[in-house]
Length: 133
Length: 253
Image (cartoon, rainbow over the protein chains, first blue to last red):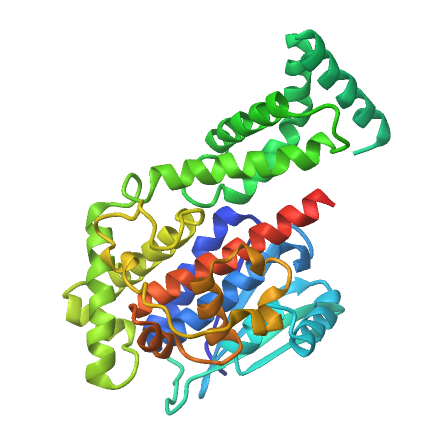
């Protein structure tokens, strides 16, 4: 089973720095490069800054270590996020969440988990094999 | 806001502006406190107490009430929102980062910026956090904290003009990169999208290179002639500006 770090926090700006440090800590342990860490944190910032897509009073960030990189899940999110992400990237609508995630991650999507929707993205690390503890 | 309070607003504004009724002004301030609080909350994660930001935002509200032209067809909410946000942003800009980020972390941040450049050349790839920690002679946690500090600077300097005059003396890189390349930004329709109009030419160019050309931060740094960390700050600051502008637009409608 792959290593997983999960953080649930109030949907409030004051807590977002905590998520940043968690991503940083994981990146450090997995020896991500500075640029890969930047990509992951930009993705995280993008998700958290678009609070309108996050459903409920809390947000959960889950980071799963994979052999070829990291998988990030955030949610639960509004189902409308799926449509907005697709529309934004295809229509070239400036630099919104869709364009941002599409640039910094290799795979981006919204998946259903127990009747809720979750944003899921994959950050792959070329030429690197990440191992679990 | 419902039609009834709007009518009340206009009555109160008339009473204050036409008859100098101070009580009407105070009632308006009270009525709009929730708006100030809501806007201040957006900025409260940047190291400032919410109540302090509410106080700062109130100054913007009072200025808006005092300057409001009752004969124009604009609603007070529409007029006050940018005034309140402007006052809060000015507050951050005036304070800069030197008052709240420990000097040691600022210095480490500047040192890391230089090391990232050096190690990227040396390793022919971006360095890892452990590599940066080793080169800087500090713990990995300190590296992460110092990098986080740089991001705080990016958001705190949100309203500062790029390459403007309020940079910390510990951030010399901020004043680099004024070299302009040939770039016809107006031909790119993506940069004309909502929110992007608040960016200056260099910010638009860097976002274009990152999000439409797919260049990495180090490639952009090379092309624009600034450090990777500076590129990172400009990207974060630009995205934050866009989000703030879109939020302001949404509030106004």
